[in-house]
Image 1 (cartoon, rainbow, N blue to C red):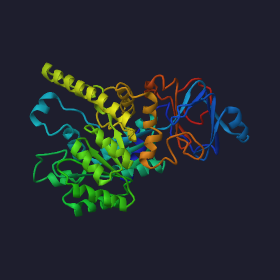
Image 2 (cartoon, rainbow, N blue to C red):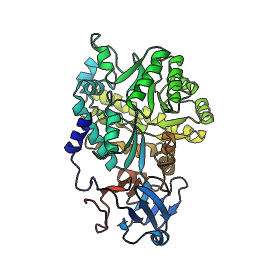
Image 3 (cartoon, helix red, strand yellow):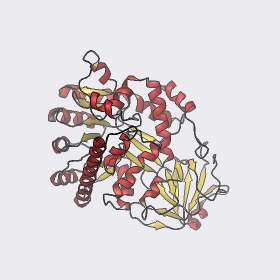
Length: 459
């Protein structure tokens, strides 16, 4: 797999505006017209950030920060731009790129919405899968996502190896928290597989749970692989005792647990088991939100299908009038449900973050561009722009347990900084057009005007 990741570094083409920059200068001064603090919503204008050895050393007015900068500092002047903390995708699937089959295929061989992409991902070459994931990782980084939490669907060791390759500087990509294989009970995701091959197919993608002892062993297998977080699916196929065993063993190993739970019974089971975060939470009740708030459990919202995506991803082929009408009706139900859910979440005071859950092929968009569509989807539910920004910066950093190093532009934190041309509070779609990306003090993208400021990298 290390060879695979090295191949990925060679195979992934980096456009001229994005560079694998050399090591950052010992001290870098970053200047812009504005800096937005997502915690308070306050603006520093104009603003400067002093960066040393990949970390933020000072923040404030240019006059104040420049006075503390040594002679010979590398200055990057972004002009009339707004600085923001690097964006965090709290729920990602870099190793999936599902293409929805044509309508006749869906009608004759349907095995769940995820089956086509999962089966192809599982049975095709791990080398090909790693190369495609490396491309998705680079594209996420280009769109301003400097950190992602990859929650399963990466093969046996895909996300842990991709994480290590990025950390070692072998290829560009966001900082990754890797979940390893997702823990499930038999019957989740894929059914009616060839009995002679079912276990071999499933074990390439999942760790199967059958009883509390097997649940603990599955956690240990991911610990052995170097996972940063445990991902488990809570549904009718999993027992409360099994989920409790997963959470207990993961916490004993000092790992957080992210629980996929969409139904009210699955959410309740996750709450009672002591999950750290509940992913999706589509049917969460007001009482459950109250219980989550009391226990400090994060709700990780995934607005993938809040705003018409279901129809869009099916438009890669010819659709009958009946199927198109059905897709449109489903999207409208999703929109109405999302509006109600988001308003209740905002009123509840529960801690929440946002993840894209992007795993679909989106025609005409890079992975990063598709990931960024979650911002407008949330905005259309009525979520204020500042709450959206907090959900992918300071709140997401807390959910990951990295609030001491990520989520805001403050002294001592990692120099993960992005810039947009306009005001993301007035227009949240500015986050779909990130113009400048810095990760660990290295410039990896700069397409801002004016073109004459120093970046130390390719333009």
